[in-house]
Image 1: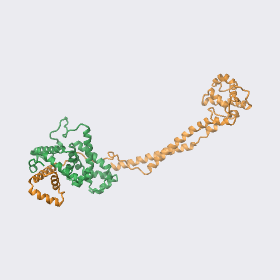
Image 2 (image 1 turned 90 degrees about the vertical axis):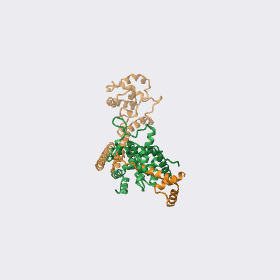
Image 3 (image 1 turned 120 degrees about the vertical axis):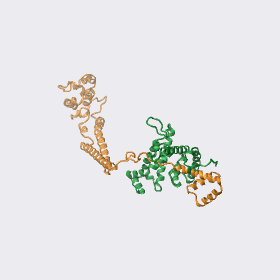
Length: 260
Length: 202
């Protein structure tokens, strides 16, 4: 007897042997005592295993939504409002950032543009802007004289620059300087460099009003994105988020009521 | 119980339908886990894991025997638990009392209809069988638990274990032989009708 016979016996016990093999095995069992004894042992072992009592589960294994990470079905409109909220918020921040940065960028690039016209270009041969600066302290009743003390101290340095090239326009600009500079202390204290730069800008020479930080008023006032749009984006973002939140809250409450 | 309809509902995410299936199969799943793992608490954990896993992957059920498919998930959960056990210290079969001492005749094995003597004998027999089962290699134990203890047919066992039918027959025969040898050591515990014969060499 070999293992193949044991396998046949085991399969026969379970009634899984095909009819021809079953007939052959049954005839062998009648004559082969050893085979019959093994058959009895297998049957006894199998019967013993089946004696094992079936135990009741110690508790119910029913699942909860939390256990399986089940989420409530959200309304179809929910992702639309969520997306709208995120998109509007992005637009708002981008617009706000653009408005914040754009005037500064144009302000930093502006002096080069003004210089091209010929009026703002300064060189050793034509130190045009130095001359007005040194005359500033001399202007009577200057409202910013107190804050502009450094200019006065640096005046001797600038005084060395030839002032002979000064044009009548420059003197006109100088006359305007006290009025426009009077705004300066409310916005930002001026340094000597700032005051010199203000005086050297062509607009000053042309007698046009100018802000103290070197940004022309037309650049400052013109923002790339209108404030109306900004407010619109903010409103859309907040309202969409609110609607999405309410939709989600309502769906969760309904689902919890249903699930228990 | 309309099993196909419940399965279909569960596949659409209906947890209540799945829980009806859980209540129907939980004893069987727990018993399979208990016989494979040999520990009540581990078996309960494995059964719970099996049901969670079954719900999450119920869409992979494509028909056939749901019982066999469920057996596959519990077998996988048991294999996972056995792998975890290898990485950490083993826990005793007998649960501890409140004092931390092992129970000789645990209450969890008790049947209220039995006399104290019968209860003691049943407990000892159960211990003996469980001891012999645990001496089997895991692959053999899984097959013998499903076929001989739970009464699954060969094709269901093959589905549950993803093993060819021929391998199932072979494993079952070997497992029965080994169990026969092991149980001979507990002959006095066995019922008279199941007393094994003299030990024979094969």
